[in-house]
Image (tube, rainbow, N blue to C red; front, top):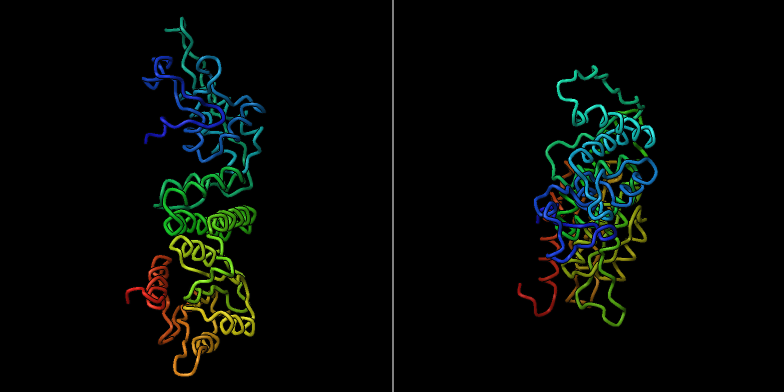
Length: 357
């Protein structure tokens, strides 16, 4: 669907067909607030706030009520977004955007032939921030998400993350929207002298929030599945949980039972959980080589439970860059979230009574 056909739920109410202004059908009335918000990577609330506080609003309102943004309005908002993304305070950015729009405005009627005064270049206020994020060739959603994150626009960040999951599913949203943006923030942080730390923290928090929100609730004790769950745990000393949170949510989408233990699980606690739950598989995440322990992985893989003659063992998957370059026969290391999902789905199907092998 073309973005100009969508409306913001708060500001827009579509009129019956016979009451729609002909100019609106031709596109002359401009973009709705919802469409413009998606284009710029901000929330509709942010656009309304800028209009109320700084006068950065639509020049024309259809029927005196509905906001419609003309190309000139859009250009002014793009300047506003560019400046705030570079760290310029909103009030200062608004003044500069308005001055830029006024300088570029067409001559008034009746002034044809009158020489216009020479334009003075409008110089944007300098900022200590490092500018936009280095995204490269990515989905368009990444650019809007990055702009919102740099502005610390939490409502827009959460709105866009939720929309990506709803439209593409957890696996695609994680690998093609969340991860590229998180990596871009990390690169910006590394290259700008520890600035942008706040951007990474805000983005990571909202990624985690959206992933947990779409995670399937665990089954009640009385409905426990016959097949053991997938245990998800970071190795001792490892604090990076976002990839495991994405895997947990994606497994839930496929209907696979999981038990998420999160960051830095002590070896003794992990061994106890394996014995108590009898998992079909265990995923051990290590972000750094210093935390990746092959002896621990082999110990978990050797765990056994069940009656004599029908003992079972878990499949142990090694997740994360910390395991790279380590020889670990019998311990698969998936290269992507999709590969991990397929492997775990096959393990679950093979261990489920009545499922095709």
